[in-house]
Image (cartoon, rainbow, N blue to C red; front, side, top):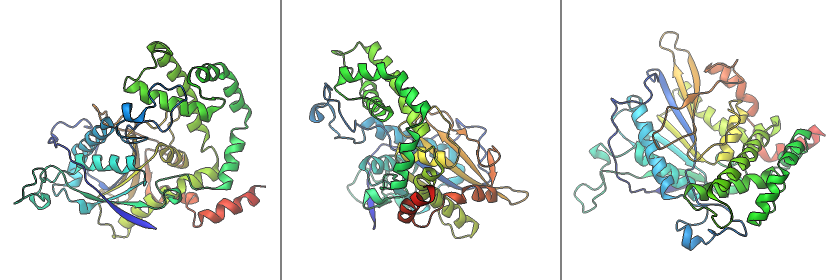
Length: 393
């Protein structure tokens, strides 16, 4: 069942200076469609260690448990401004919500993140969208609401979530984590896991629990919530850095299976491809598609498309940019993918990714791109989650 959520974000708009682009070599003269897949921005922790001195939600995390922080809202707003500045020649000056399709995970931090991005990218510069004219509302010329589609229940969302129960995925992941090199990695980090367990009260024995520990400690350290009665600041920083290796390892392993790539990344890939096809069929009336989601979905899609950069985890606000272009001379279409892992503050340009399944090219001819991704399209998720077990065994 699908539902529509209308999200309103009140922000102050600062005009982007299009003459001062930070991405001077970015040619969008042939751009026909832009699609963004972004992680939500900075949030409060999802869990707390038993000994965590900052686990009092009311005292330390006024926004709530696992919710978007003010820093996260600002990050996405600035990222939206950056998108407007760099793609303004493509978007044009209408600033119309009707040229944008937005879908979000049902999680509140995802809806709020993409709302903040849109506030930065689509201020109502045209009077047609300034809804306060003739009223006593003072902010109608600096922000506008957007319809945001989401999916209920959250656990069944196959586009912006990757948590729907699937026995074959669980089985494949179990096999991955039984590999010799994985066990060697855990053994190598046994002392680290033991030290952090003793200090925090967690039971850290594997890569997954170490990743969760890194997540919480990193978030708290970033807002200067240092465990100064447990470690010195330098010691805590060192432990966070060491735990990051486990977190990065998890992203190398969680989708390291053709079956997992298809079933966890295929839903969103199919959605993106359908949007591209609308351009081919002259049935598209959108300039921008946005999908607001989680780090795990970015990991699933990047692994599925064989564009995973390796060694990094998607940070808050990380965004994959999919561009569909048409050459002026031959009229042939091609797909370009870029990645921004440092959004918001003094943003550097996204970097081009090579298509691992497209002869390692940066610009993948459209037909080659479709051919390289068709194995990711499934028609019956639940059926494959059950039937694939018999195929493999």
